[in-house]
Length: 166
Image (tube, rainbow, N blue to C red; front, top):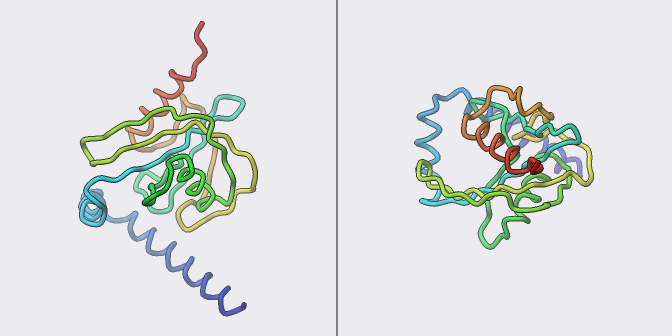
């Protein structure tokens, strides 16, 4: 049991170190590596989670140039998209979410990606830092941190879509 725990600890330390090194590399290296490593077309899932005040939940990623971003991840083969975002969120935080509805299914020409964006809510658990996520925090949608422009636009789109009709 102790040997398994120490192996896990070593793995986590090594992963955190490698992800921090990855973040320091220029953006063109990230793009090139992702195009070479990933399949020609990939599918990703993301969770839009708002609190009672209408703030959006963001993750602070350990490996990104722009650290803050929407909770997201990749779809595994033979995995249903709604199950994928629940799995990804749990793997990265130790918390359980529930999918309320699909907000958007979109294909991006720039990076050969299909994105499935879900409106979700947290149902249980306490945040636990992982090798990929160091922090999570709610932000006012009009005062977002430095993050990918496309994700900021997606948040603004979701806020408009979810706004009640007057």
